[in-house]
Length: 404
Image 1 (cartoon, rainbow, N blue to C red):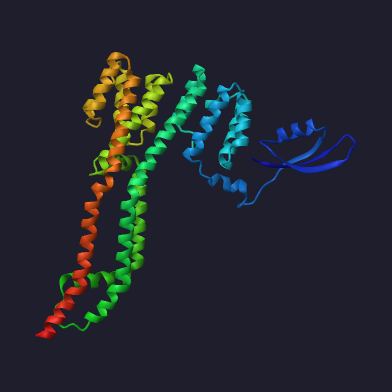
Image 2: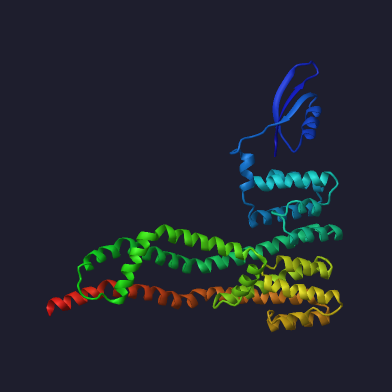
């Protein structure tokens, strides 16, 4: 929060100076008046570029911070505390300085007559459209504490899933990185020594050795171009993925990748079902629910199918037919949703779909290392064989010539 420097006089006319950390000048004047002082001047202190106030904007608000915020606010509201008192308690309890500042601004907006949802919507980098719309539904239905608990559960579920995926991919990433580093070290320090040995070799060097020598010369002479090209390629790919066409193509590739593709698709199906069920239970209109699901699903290919489902629902048609036509949604999803539509028990069916795919994802992640290991062995074995042949074949040839 901003820091204000004030000058004030007491009832005897004596001048006092000090600082108060609060939201705005009006609150400083109110506090001074409550203490019996007459404000003379109130100025906001402008801090330097490396001040805590400046550095706060780079502080990351983690999913765990948001989960704790939701749980605590739900507990305070269910205990019967007014909204303003609840936010004041959260400001005191929150450790993240950036989130503390956001909560203070939300409290100020609510004090000014804004709804909680509208106040949260002014901070889109912290609170997603899913979060804001569910809060709006909770305020309208008088079940805000229940909605906050659902949001916390949804965030916990996604955080656990991300943690499992990271844990499963850590091993192959470490192996690939170590292999790449070993290759660079060999090409930089080991191969040049053998190049000097083979420089006076009069016969024709084997193909693997010639390739190694060429690679060594290329890296030695053009290393800066290699680094620049690699960095340019990364930035170029990231730029293209951030475009509409690039994101669509990348998301399509992701769900069709061998080994990883089925996992990405199952994660998307679990997320779709869980968010859809949570929003539907919150009492949001079906068209608004589909809009939010489309925006938060995290895959453009599936998002487009959901947009078609929304158009179908707007036209008074069913939800399932566009899913079947797309061939993106697996048959189990479309069949169970069809049953849910017919029986009016859509929420329970969606939760069962999500639970099913959570189990499938957990099983797939557990077996991920087993599936990747043969590929890693082939890649590393091929690299080691190539280096061994390139280094030792000329030595064997020289030994044969000496014996001859």
